[in-house]
Length: 151
Image (cartoon, rainbow, N blue to C red; front, side, top):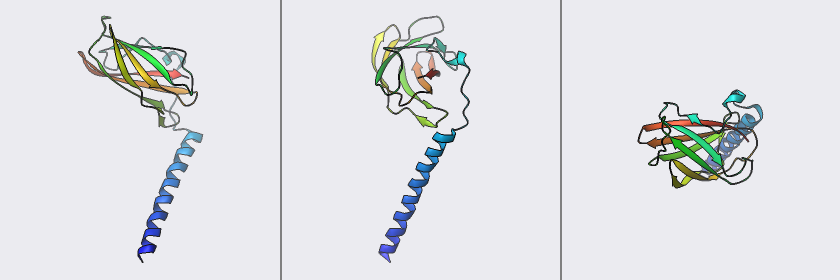
């Protein structure tokens, strides 16, 4: 009886993982329904944050390409153009049409002064539309900015 119970649990777990993988594969094939923004929305900045507290600009060390580990600088300024040197920045992102996030966990590794921060560990595992999101906490409060990138 104990063996039968164990086998049933294993069967349920196997079925659940198979369905999850199948669901993800179907999403990759058919998409999530997310609509690609207009071409004018694809920019490295400057881009205002959602609440207008900050203006951010991305400066990749090289052109963004898939399947390459990259470093990206971000310049964070207030609306008057002054650099924000005390910011905490959390990086997130993904492919809205495919329903997956970034394959790595990019993070700010250095503050270079005058509102310039270095983000290391940026990698895009395929070409296409990516969102690159920054959550910024600084002297002006908490705000977010999203960059649409064509990689």
